[in-house]
Image (cartoon, rainbow, N blue to C red; front, side, top):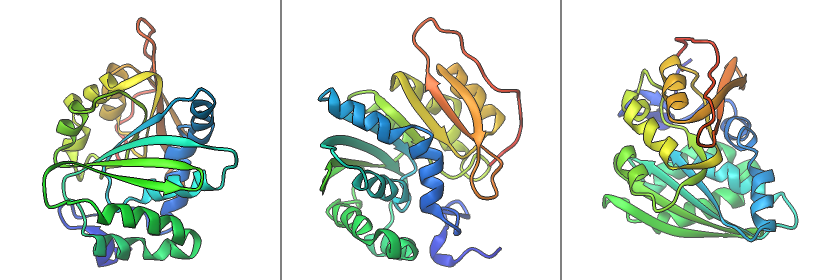
Length: 248
């Protein structure tokens, strides 16, 4: 299948996401896999903020899907810190082009995200921040322009959920290296979650070593399985699914 040029990340010769239904894929893997709606509701009841970390911002499709999902919920007043990283940030024009195919179903939410993104000076490395105000709460978008490990190490607080959404291990091995996944484990609260499209054996082993209890769950579209994990409390025993060398 030929990848439309606007969907191709030329740095990795890989598409930003599946052309079939990237929104539903993001919901299934990351939002449902992390039980985001349920956990955000709990955070609201407890008067707490919810922190999400992401490796691979790309065109922002997971963030747009998150806004779309939470805006359909009632009786929320959330505050979410959404910290993501992108080594090669897209221009706002390119982002709008990539997301154009989803405007018929989430136009206002895509517009909110793009408006916030347009306020970031992505020409400069390091952290950039913009607030996204929605009817049900506020998302503080914190985008790090640069290398993923630098972003993770510079976080001022651990995350409740991690979305690992970078290009797969074959295309972008640096974002799946042991040192980086170990740092993600260290920057996750006890009981926090990690979700990802890939079920590559070395990724699972490194996440398990980083303190996550892992399971393969039903995939989306043509993908048989995807991965979710939960950060174990200190002293708990790790567990990992049967070894596999399957790659994304």
